[in-house]
Image (tube, rainbow, N blue to C red; front, side, top):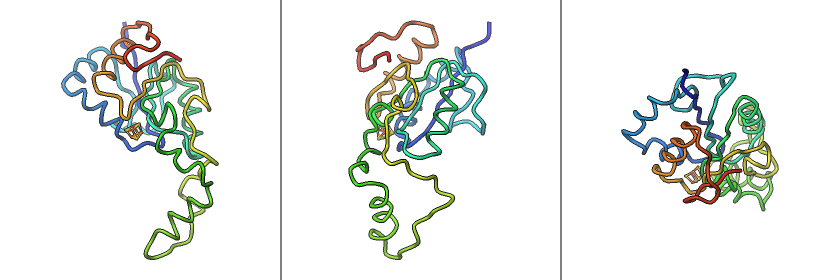
Amino acid sequence: MSKPTLATVWLDGCSGCHMSFLDIDERLLELAQKADLLYSPLVDRKDFPDHVDITLVEGAVSSTDDLAKIRKVRAHTKILVSLGDCAVTSNVPSMRNPFGVDAVMRRGYVENVTEARPIPCSVIPTLLDRARPVHELVSVDVFVPGCPPSADLIYEVLGDLIAGKPVVSGSRGRFGG
Ligand code: SF4
């Protein structure tokens, strides 16, 4: 029987949730025996696969690129996991929300620099009007809060999902959607 497949996706986050995933340490070898990691910032594959059983998503949805990516990921994923507070609540990225995009761009590219540059209008993905949690844009199956969630929690959730066990609502900081 083929192994379940995994992916991890990085939207608007600091990579801390991925660092916590790596903090699973030697238990990653155990997970690798049970599941295949197909797509991740940690592997050199550029396109999201046609089908993934379990995808962990770090970060809020903050730009047009994030939105296109999460829609594609959702369409090709069986179990979508919001990993960490930025994905679950929009957390740190949402600190810009009260100010509006124009003020944030002005602050970043004009007011808060020693040498002002034009505000970029290409190459850099266009910001959405506000950073939003993943479940506001696509359906989410499992929420794993924490900033970041602990390695033990990620290991436990992944182990259960790979084994096909139900994820219990409110159990030790994780809950099903
Ligand atoms: Fe970073 Fe915390 Fe957001 Fe994870 S939840 S991406 S650790 S700020």
